[in-house]
Amino acid sequence: MSTDSLKLFDLSGKTALVTGATHGLGMAIAKGLAGAGAKIVINDIFPEKIENAVKEYKEDGIDVAAYEFDVTDEKSAEEYVAKIEKEVAPIDILVNNAGIIKRIPMVDMSAEEYRQVVDVDLVGPFIMAKYVAKSMIARNSGGKIINMCSMMSELGRNTVSAYAAAKGGLKMLTKNMATEWAKHNIQSNAIGPGYYATAQTAPIREGGHPFNDFIINRTPAGRWGLPEELQGVAIFLASQASDFVNGIVVYVDGGILATIGKPMNE
Image (cartoon, rainbow, N blue to C red; front, side):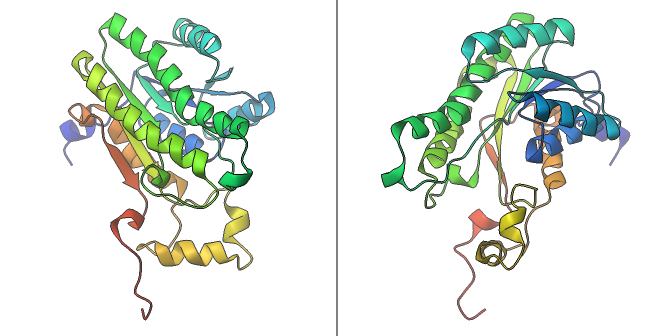
């Protein structure tokens, strides 16, 4: 690849806010963006998580700015977007990564529990994108918005009704962001991760857990993904290389959504 081609992926001088990037896939994405040259800002609602995450970023040589606020609180989100842009820099890249899941059968799930998942996973990205986009439009700077969708944006699964509904909604919200903001040179896209080997999934990957075998057999690649395998697509969607890409979901799932599954005799 030529030097000029590599420049398409260079994020030097850009500032990226990755919500909830105190662990897991969000942290992996933030580290990937930092490796491409971006200044990283993270947030969380738990101060201990923020403190531990900042230490880990620093151990990797990443100077991260961290803020404690709730993406579902519109007033707080508006204030902190302004605060970040004043104290750090205008936000060029927003990754709506903060999210939760509650694994509860629908007949046992309360409306309050359902609303909580939808609030964090769907309303939160709307709120954050709204205020970041407002600033991008006012500056006439363009920008990148990346929403974290899921295979549950396409498929259902037992006990995750609220999560699937929210992630399906986030897919359509991404398309509507593109519809409204593309004219302002803002590219709005999404990443749909498959199943990844993280600390959170360790209990279902180890000790002969049946779900581990299910995922390996269901995934054409025959394995769980590695968190760093999301970095390439995140850099692409955050960079000049994707300047005419708008309103899509890139599924990084080892091929799960491409197949009905392995034949019984294979």
